[in-house]
Image 1 (tube, rainbow over the protein chains, first blue to last red):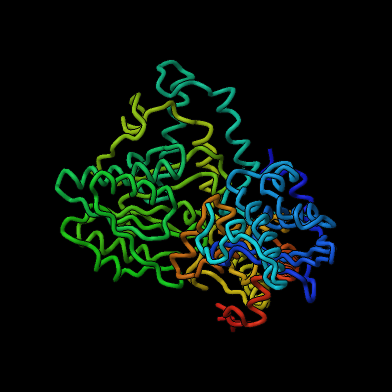
Image 2: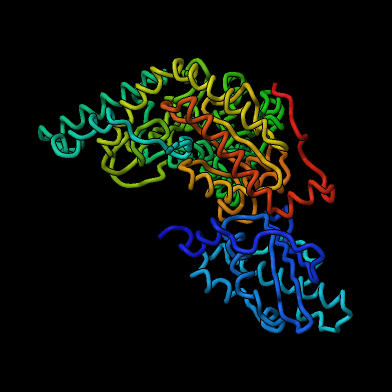
Length: 143
Length: 402
């Protein structure tokens, strides 16, 4: 079997929703260059708390790009509550699996979305439980 | 266009080598240890191969041991020297931080057994100096093991000088010459090399066969126990077809070193010049003291695996030292050893040309790498931070070619 599923390669070669949203309602960035991957998610959220648009920028390996792309597809047009419920397992499954040592890429995708939602909450004075969100200060490379 | 440019990983077996090997699968298939004719014929060819390889390396036939490849040869060389040293109370071993894992991991095993392993720092140009070796040698040094040419960045080490120092100090000197033997002229006696490892598949021979040269007088420790093959030092029925293939391949490679290097030098210049035009990129390893077929670059703001996969889509086979390609958390230990920060080591690319490479292929590689890097940078938040000044650049925008 090849390293990556066809789905992963498709999303890597033709990533969906690449780019930047100017004046985004929420922006989340996770990872760091020392570890070799950074994901940045931009959200446009309407008054009904529905994700009207989502874009991403990613520095990382093939599965990091594919995971970002897939994650944006999974939350596009969805209510915020659904975006927050997105798990890394869901991203992995939607990609028809990832090699064991690449699973952290799907974790980054989940965390990037959560981080963007948190940014939206912060900007709009919406209260939340920080425990539901990844710690933005963690700089250690994922395992 | 298809360009295989990962010849430091492995090479295609040359048709001449395949042809030379074929009789030893179906005609002269005897076991060299057998006493009847087809066995003795095999034995004859085995010994003839040993003589031919010995001649190329400047060794005596009885100093040539056939192994399953470079890793086994490295393992056996290091373990043997360690056992010899330990008998005299010498348990200090000198090596470098950027050796192949076949060396480093064997040294790890010895360290757990109580040996003291000293890994020399590698200068930013990817070379260790003879002075470093001289300064590190102690009364209880059992072995100096330093690679001839680095597998990732192709830098060639001052083997003559290190050999002379080791001889003067009476320390066993082993060199992993897997990446060097088809690129530089080696003479183990002139260069005072006590042990040397080579692997056939790096020079158009078959996989699964290699050589350990060990100077007469060095008592090897078996790593494979069993029958009395290889003068009792390496058990297992000899891979005769492989050994014959390796012999033909090595003769061919060594006979063409100068002609190939002349050709490679031009392509290497072209490749380095072309890739240097990509902003915020830098060559890894010394510009001069390197294998002529090797070019290794770091590019800021991108990750090596993505680069490699997209180049593969364009028909180009190359490798990277990023963590993602190694399956570990850290990028290449070689790039870290020469002082590259993690964030640029993740964005590395190794191109190792084959003898049939053309200017047209090199130009295609340059164009493709430039395109892919521009594309990956276009949506890399790391690159965005570099451009906006949020994070500092590691490299200059353009480095003057040396």
